[in-house]
Image (cartoon, rainbow, N blue to C red; front, side):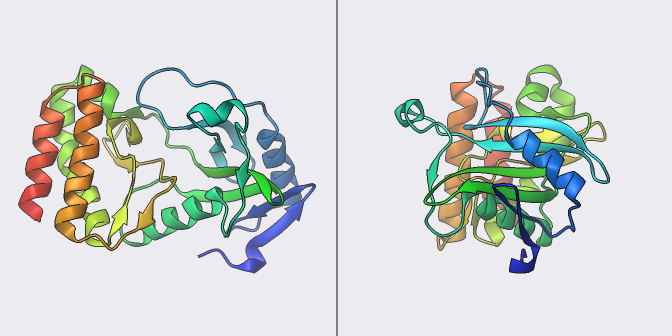
Length: 233
């Protein structure tokens, strides 16, 4: 996990990482943090915008800009009240935990924030190359969808076994690369829960079902996940 020694100041930003980031890397990151946030299009997306760039010595990274949804976004689009850990640090740590227990997620590189009581926040993770969302694949290639669903069910089962609740897991938050490797993304607000396996399984299935129905994705996504998780628990 991230220690205090891995948190450093650069310009007006606080950056945390398990890596020894150079001044050149920090300069590049803080430049990316300053890029204006673009509005995301429709579809299965979260409440964040991202910037993709190459970081010398690390490779291509995805910089997640935490942004608000709902009516409040018109007043405080990117600012959050700091009470304990920032959103970036919290997601960074849950990604570390997920990797430790065998869940396939993008490698977290760093988190950052700027401000005091009210702050802006960012998360930096390694880019998954040549990827598509499960939502896209399910609409285009039924055979490939069948191939990856078993792995997806195994990944979610690990989260359930370790009582980790991903509050917004749906086919748009699962990436598949060119080798059919599965990556779960967008762990913002994910947390350890005291729900038992049955309750947690139902929570995952219900969220998944709502997304599939809302976005008119193939019904087999619901049937396969429901059967796979129900048989395990």
